[in-house]
Amino acid sequence: MVSSKADTKGPHAVKDTLPNKTVLRALAGEVQSVPPIWMMRQAGRYLPDYRATRAQAGDFLSLCYNSDLAAEVTLQPIRRYGFDAAILFADILLIPDALGADLWFVTGEGPRLSTIETMADVEALKPAGDIHEHLAPIYETVRILSRELPQETTLIGFAGAPWTVATYMIAGRGTPDQGPAHGLRETEPAIFEALMERLTRATIEYLSAQITAGAEVVKLFDSWAGSLKGEAFQRYALAPARQIIEELKSRHPEIPIIAFPREAGDGYIGFAKATGADCVALDNSVSAEWAAKNVQVDGCVQGNLASSHMVTGGQALVDETRQIVEAFREGPHIFNLGHGITPDADPENVQLMIDTVRSIAPAESVA
Ligand code: CP3
Figure 1 (tube, rainbow, N blue to C red):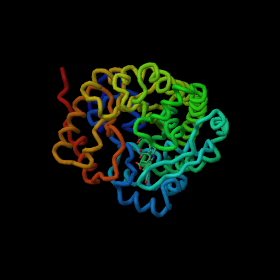
Figure 2 (figure 1 turned 90 degrees about the vertical axis):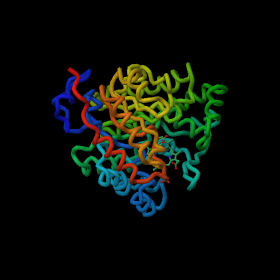
Figure 3 (figure 1 turned 30 degrees about the vertical axis):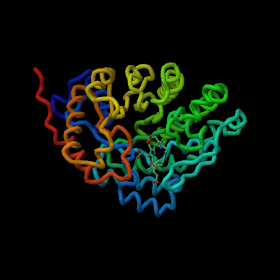
Figure 4 (figure 1 turned 60 degrees about the vertical axis):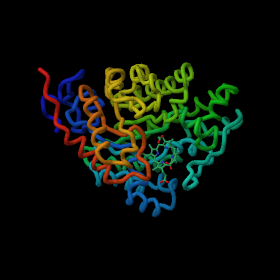
């Protein structure tokens, strides 16, 4: 599939040394007539096989820390749909857990954690270098996956970005507006920055260990980046991403990194260049046409079909999928949703999305 002339146009020449993995080729800047596809939360509750394995594990956190079962749920959507990438099954809140915060999940509600309010709370966390023993099962999941995945499937590791993880640690739960985290950063900047620093170090150590275990790409999820505006976005979304990426690139120069500053809006412009990311993942609050002009000019983009189409399906899914592929076809692109697939999604709609992307005829070559 990656052989026609149309595949080799675009800003970067094809690197012959790249393995036959379409996701790695897109991340290296290759323009492909059919973009590779994967989906955020592709292993999740919309799949009956996921629900069965989670029940076998007992609960969500036990599933994350059970390497065999976590590898199994990671593989389920690959077997069912043949996605071009697998994302490690884990959670962004395992870092706070490894740092010594209490973490539990309330079914139907989401995560709960012990809160961070004082400098003593930050100082009670473990040093960033001490997370590996706790996270060893995650690295084992990565090792199992790098043995068991089909050779054409790219293995993606991930972590939450410091700001997003901090919003959960400060509030002790998910919040609609990240109010407690904004409050702490405004009234107690020293406490807030000490927490951000600890998380930045831990994230570097965690992602670096995932890479050593076999992750071929890593992705940084900053799900709440959009609630940081102006100077705060620069300091707490962009700067930590740059620091993490710089350090990972110095340790593992060949590993591509995807940044996802969700709902950054104009903040997406120049984000890859400013942070050193190889790819920016886009949510669906920006149009693909806008992003092609303003973001894809700097390299690979990932996204950005609204995940609601996985619930509603039909012609609207087909039309919107086509429009996104068309908008991004002049540059490197990885097809994905704008955010994670939801539990009420219909597995048939996922197949319809994949069939639509893979059936779009290559563009007429422009003389
Ligand atoms: O994308 C993937 O499939 C990889 C695995 C993955 C999960 N969570 C599994 C999960 C990834 C990359 C995440 C990231 C994550 N986790 C984020 C950032 C991305 C995003 O979606 O914005 C955040 C904010 C979290 C924290 C988290 N984990 C919350 C708020 C919740 C509860 C909300 C919900 O959807 O239930 C989780 C639980 C969670 N993480 C589930 C899964 C499959 C559902 C748990 C279950 O099986 O009950």
